[in-house]
Length: 271
Image 1 (tube, helix red, strand yellow):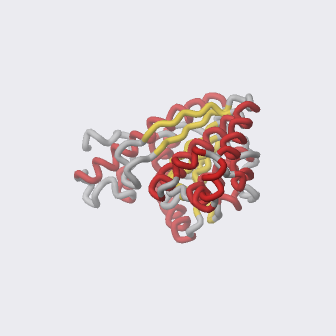
Image 2: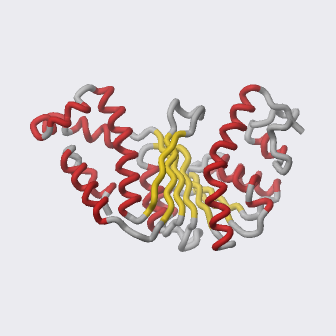
Image 3: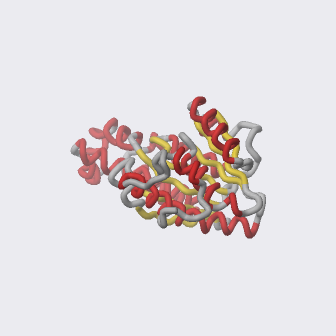
């Protein structure tokens, strides 16, 4: 077996995920994909170990699951060799849900379930437990990441792992009220030019998300997933619940939204 692949991994799964070629080989592209997988797993494995030690029947919900790439890798590298734990893949495209169900059955991954639901609808369904211990959202586009955060808060998640992408809502709001902002604050110079509005809006979105999580009692770390193909830069936000909400952080959120003339986004980032 190729030395880069962990001996306990399912070769069939790696072929299905196109990490291995059909004849079981690694090419340059698949080596890169495998490196990405191990890099992300490096951040999530300690969370799984922590939950397994305190709550063997822990649950994980993966939002915007797509082909359930992340869920299958976590199951193969961790859950398969440990008792307990259940992964729920939540995806809006019915054909991808069906394919994931078929693959899980073929591999014998019995502690995986797949739901054809939006992130918002998943918070209300009886098909999920009342509490979800770990919530992940890998490249949930634009406000779908915010829906995943809201879901995690409603489900009292102990850990949240996010890789946001395509966040355009804040930039759109900055542009919508640009003329008013020029008269209100000199900070509007930060987003006077369209390219700056886009980049600043994307950055600000993740800043606001981190502050929201901190205000609800999460300890937040932010790092970068290097070399992921989805974009040149991928922020990885990992939040651990401490049980100590921060009113001072909420006040900072309110100040930022007011100062940048973004009161229209109050309901999304302050609750």
